[in-house]
Image (tube, one colour):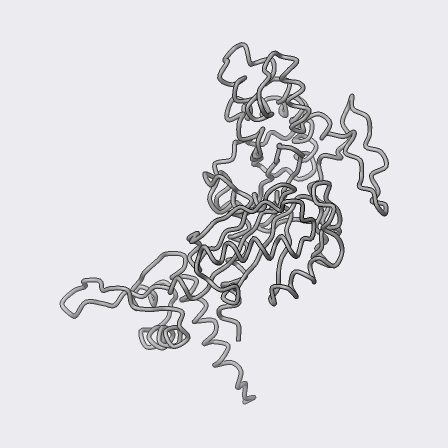
Amino acid sequence: MERRPGVPRLLREINDRAALDLLLATGPMTRGQIGDLTGLSKVTASQTLARLEERGLVEVVGTQAGGRGPNAALYSVIASSAYVAGLEVGPELISAAIADIHGHTVAEVTVDPNGDTDPVSVVHGAIVKACRSAKVSIGRLRGVVIGTPGVVDPRSGDVRFSFDLPGWHEGIHEALAGDLRREVTIENDVNLAAIAERADGAAQGLDDFVLLWASRGLGLAVMLGGKLHRGRSGSAGEIGYLPVPGVPLPEDIRTLPGRLPSLAGGLAALVSAEAVAELAQGHGFAAGSAGECVKVAVAAGAAGEPLLDEIAHRLALGVAAVCVILDPGLVVLAGEVGHAGGTALTSRVEEAVARICPVRPQVVTTTVTDRNPVLRGAVLAALDQAREELLAP
């Protein structure tokens, strides 16, 4: 018989991962409970927990009363066994959060770049400030995920272009990794919001859905088979460029040296925050922001219905185009405008889509309660990386 010396080691790694994943998902458990749910024998479960204890990943946190015998020890993953950093980078503010391996946020800070356009400098400063607040050294971070607006190249990991962050260009990904001395992931901000939605929101547990982010700009995240669909160049979801009736086509959208693509034309011209605020003003609902305009219209009852009808019609043009191609079943409206509209807006979008499209998806408002879903998504993505790294050979 052929000898395969690597098999026992592989089995140990599989068992260790199964036990660790179970403890992270469910919280403290006894050896017997871990064995029952993973299919491991009592002896194997004991050996697995002993290895995880030796590596400083789990500890006994209490006991559970059982039958006639002694109380059983309760095991839990040590919260400080790993930390991660999630960031949301915008043109005016950077938010950074540090979380432990359970996903509990231990510190969150905001930093004003104050005119500093160097991505490495501003990210480093934000992470240092967050780590100091959490009393965690940068060296203990096992995952760093940064959310930015714009297109992220899935091959290089760099931002291909971003209207809001012109300083983020080719080479930044490598420079950040070198500065922080560890791998760094840059991800589109709307994609991260979708990760948060699937973990904690209206799309919890769903493998197929799309999230339409209607705020200052317009973006779409596509989740298929439980995975984000980014496209070959990372441009999947750039729905703002979608040609729609009655709006000029986007022109001169190529990225040229020293110049960013034009935002004029396409669906974004109809439902960007600027367009919604202008539309609201025409209906007599002037407020400080597009989201506030929509909130006022919702609160106005019948007087606000014409404005909501028009916003829904405009959004439906994009939703219908997506649904006849992907048929996702669920569409989540998020961002400033999407969140403010609530069911008054989603019900109208659903009806408007049904009038122009053979596919009728369920349209719902985001239910992510975190005030910053992009930041939460960045933390969750970083946690996935950290948990993989914890049990790496």
